Length: 190
Image 1: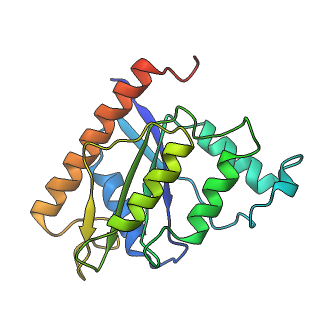
Image 2: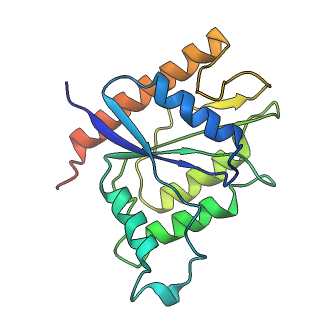
């Protein structure tokens, strides 16, 4: 069985984020071929091109963490009809300096949860545009906008609603299939 390393980003910086709960659930529901690990974004300073000649250690470690995975997954809330500033900052760090875009040819998926009925649809639309610009092959066949209700996901990542658990399990299976397809056509070492 071939396994793939998937780095995930939680778009919220909050320690009590419902998207962090969703990420825990996705880790538990992923097929065994996917090994997920968080790539933290909270310690990155605000990006500036002034850093391009010499990235600070935290940014170099961040870019290396992305280089070390086969694919990335964005688990993000929606702030003011967009992606959180911390997540956009992380994407800016990863996509720079010019010619060293960490997302180029790296398969990606997007998912999120919100108490609102449309989940994180508008934020995901914006994030998809950014990822397309970053030349990241993006899973589009399964979109996932999860409406969060209290108790839906436990602190340990157990999903309490069977239909939601099945939907998320399917999402992760589709992500696995997508990663295999992309890396068959665009091998990492090519």
